[in-house]
Image (cartoon, rainbow, N blue to C red; front, side):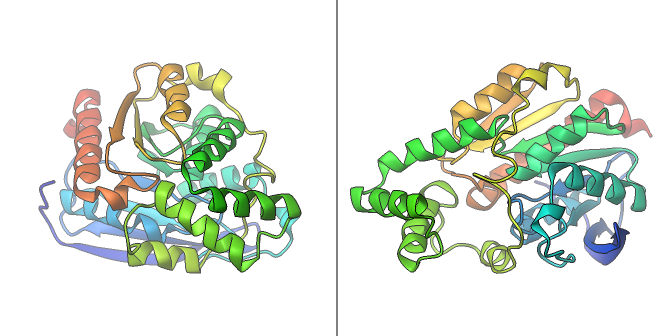
Length: 297
């Protein structure tokens, strides 16, 4: 990826439902005509933006790159009432971010749960979307959970037994369970050893989550994917906990979508194969802009 300019960053808060949502805008010192902002949605829910730090490098190509921490984690406020959190809350929060930061025309990037939120936003007839980038994203949470459990069959028998034992007993705060999950994570979440500092920082600031058996367990948009007509790039890893079978649903359902599978990555190819990931992403964004005439703006 050709780095053309130095960058600067602006951070702040927007007001949303009486709380503060933190954002960060990385700006090229020389913004290139026709390059639209890239708005990045983190995963979890509840794992803040920090682990997406490598995406800031795209600002060197002349475009703004914007991050925010969803309510409940990172640098944003953390309402303690678990009933406060819902998919609709995060959809409204995304609308509030776009409105407050005047993001009328954007590329929208989502990683993992962030990609689910991208899909929800798009299917809500959102306007001003030049392209979608769905990184390590399922279309069906039940399928994702089933596939993730199948991946455990590749782990040592004692690790499998420990994970199942504690999840059945509801003792997932036990040290033994956490150590076993660490083995799973180093196989299917991020295969780098040690983990990059931006990923460990994100996990040190994890907030409210409602995944797995929580509020998003029945989330499934498979039957609505044909409604999406925005240019879409799918990115995933060969060893991803969001398995190729999950991503195949998106690829078949979204007309004209492109899919790049990273052969040496799991759930974090932007960390595991950063240079290639950024090159693929930059080329896609530039091609969309060229084909749509944004480069003439």
